[in-house]
Image 1 (cartoon, one colour):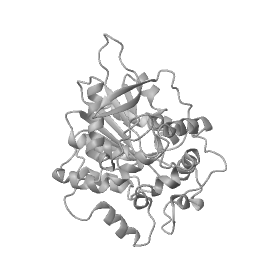
Image 2 (image 1 turned 135 degrees about the vertical axis):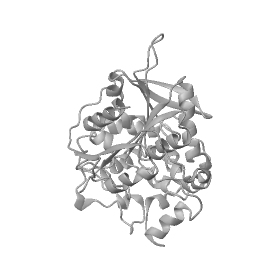
Image 3 (image 1 turned 180 degrees about the vertical axis):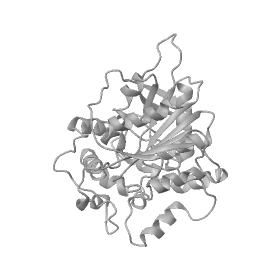
Image 4 (image 1 turned 180 degrees about the horizontal axis):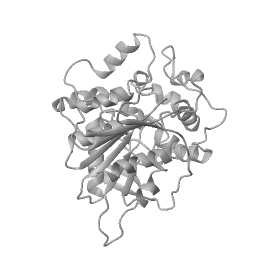
Length: 348
């Protein structure tokens, strides 16, 4: 694959996560109680450190950043990884309309307020955390000085046109299966996914990884009837995911006992499109960076499309791509990911 002039490809190594310096607490943000993991917070009387805010995706939690917390802190950053709205020990408002991008960006602004942060932060987002990070930079450049998208590129903001769910239905056909559409009906996906939290996480984390044989990859199964038809159950976990890791992820979702909070992010896409219309055509001017992977499943994200972001992301400082890696980039390739992220941060 042609990675483009500003992209590079990396290979694999997987260290053990060091959580010895990680602390946990709750903060009030944007009307919800939010659980955060953090490392590198300055002691009383010490000068503030640059803040790096890590935003996870679906179906994940703060623990998705377990390999980044200690290295970023050791490099001199105050790093904060929240479990976002609807996830883990963070509140999960029942109203589907409480999961738009405006709510989620508001949560991150409120988190900075709770931290007493007077300086603008770097926001890093993977999967669903990607749109949160990009929109933090777009909507509040005064609070977010730089942005890193992992897996999900910035697609700009458009005004009017078809609703996102209508465009997806048009893409897969009237009877075609697509998990985002499957997630729209309240209760349907929950009935399937919540039946066994651990089994669901096991299948999802494996099936979207770079470790599933390409011949067994079924994620784009438009003939599926349920999400399990797009997934595979691993005979054994891939090397980057231990049974202990799975225990932690499962315990986070067991707090609410359901995937509903995360699924509601998908149910907010049409309302988000309506609410974001006033920002159509607005660009991101802060320093930006992108991290992608060869076997990621995010539709339409490749080196050429990331390079095309320069129209809307005017200070895109490059991209790295991990060969043989799947969707869970910072977990599958933590050492290389950390090197790339610290390289970007060091150049700011």
